[in-house]
Amino acid sequence: MHKRLQAYLEFYREELQKAYTSCFDKLEIPANLKQSMLYSLDAGGKRLRPILLFASYEVYGQDVQKVMSSAIALEMIHTYSLIHDDLPAMDNDDYRRGMLTNHKKFDEATAILAGDALLTYSFELILSDPLLTSEEKVVLAKELAACSGPKGMVGGQILDMEAEKQSVSLEAMEEIHALKTGELIRFAIFTGAYLANATDEQLQYLKQYAYYLGLIFQVQDDILDVSGEEEKLGKRVGSDELNEKSTYPKLLGLDGAIAQKEKYVQKAYESLRLAGAEDSLLKALTDYFSQRDH
Image (cartoon, rainbow, N blue to C red; front, side, top):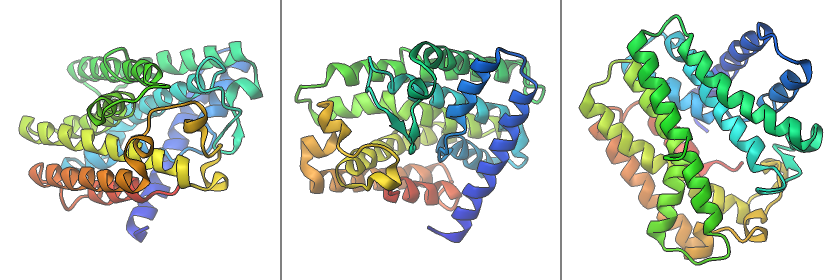
């Protein structure tokens, strides 16, 4: 990994950790609920979505404190989705990031409620952010609801479940993952650029970029589930096959999945160029998404 990118990732992970810890220090809620929420938030995630939000903001703006609450909200939405994904009724996983999943550490009811709490608290954070105007709050709350709800991530999850034990086309798989994985990435890219006053044209090209980045992320996820190392991944290798998921390697073969990922990478680069962001850290993050090993 490029040293500049590595330093960037480490710096903003620490900044995000400090910021959300401060939020929870002030939060007066039942102790077991707070413990369960923080358990999954603290579980060593890469924080890629909020880091994308920071990087997108810095293409056109400067002081990232403007986007900090939005970044925390995004990470909480992502974490809630993982808690619920791991439940017995969904993927039935015992480990996440090398740690017991939330329902194994606590219990199923607490895990469900912790996910619910992270989801709803994320909107409160954005709507009470003193650094955002009233218009910005409305725009971001609407975008976050769309990206995480039935038109976005949740809709993609349903399509993904329906595709289990079936053969689906490449187009259908792209639709699934553009929603399930890509919509939260789109929120990250949109929010950063929007709050930094990007033009409508720039936002449109960045929307295209986010679409391809979401697909890159998912293809690499599928590849790692076939060829990754459990110690690095912190979860079972082969769980997609065990759950009879529709994946890129299953549809295209491992070599075909790698080739398809490269097509997405080139399209992402072109979208960045058109947005005037080809020299930004977003390009380095695209490479990181494509080449990550966990």
